[in-house]
Image 1 (spheres, rainbow, N blue to C red):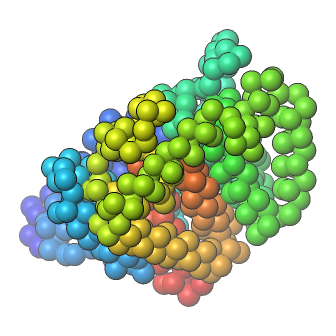
Image 2: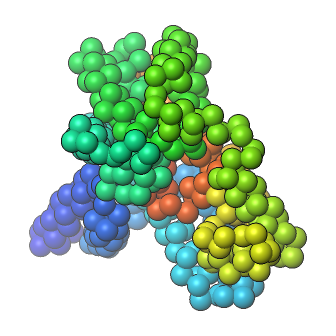
Length: 395
């Protein structure tokens, strides 16, 4: 490589690194900035490979599963009644590149630590903004906290932040400064999650915390029990009412979800193989649900049913197989690196996030929320990188 080309490669790589930090920092803050940074990353990464005359995308155990999911999206688009809309919305598959970027470009523990510090630093900053909003008098008694995003997205982002941070606070080999810092960070994150008053994210956070407790430190279960009990005893009626409604099948929101799920299964029965395409389901829901439907949703508040309707049985099998493989791979990597305080904590947090994501997906279309999926892909990519680094180091 001549000197000029080497200089161009170095400059482009520097821009790529800067864009990746902006991407990580904005993951909890702004979808617009995050998308712009992602575009710059993609362009720079391609340029670095072209200028360096080197293909630097690593293969992963998930490659064929991702290809199957992409193929299912394309197949559903071909047979959709609205192929243009389906093709446009199926662009979500492009976000998979995030997995490959971090899996390929995070090449050392130091690089991984910097990336995670930026990511979690942004999460704590956002949570702190939420606490400040609460201290300044909002939201009110019957409203829900929003921090840069709709409260439902805010709740999922705070759930993810909590599950990523908690393992660092309880890993016995982590430096005391890290454990104390992580413990302190959990306070604004937990308060902000609580103030969103979002049932699905509450359940997702509990599921992830229980997983971490069972794997790393069972004493967390005692703290969790005390915390849930304190909320049940001392939280205002609006919060306790929301929590109690989780098991109330006659609650209006629960009835609405049951109606949506039943309607979704009717649509699936008419389009069982390739689905209706990755489209907004508003028109179809009005047609199939009958006169009792309010007509306010374009999705089904359940990942599995939504995928069945939009991608059919073929797509649902591809997505479920992908999810299972992700879980298996993240758990396998955690088992390999568990004794390393950094890699073990992050890998366990990523696995807990994935479990929380699945629990949230029982009542929300979380797979269709770009801000949430981006974080799932980031954590997966960094976990794959940590597994690759451990393999090189013989761990």
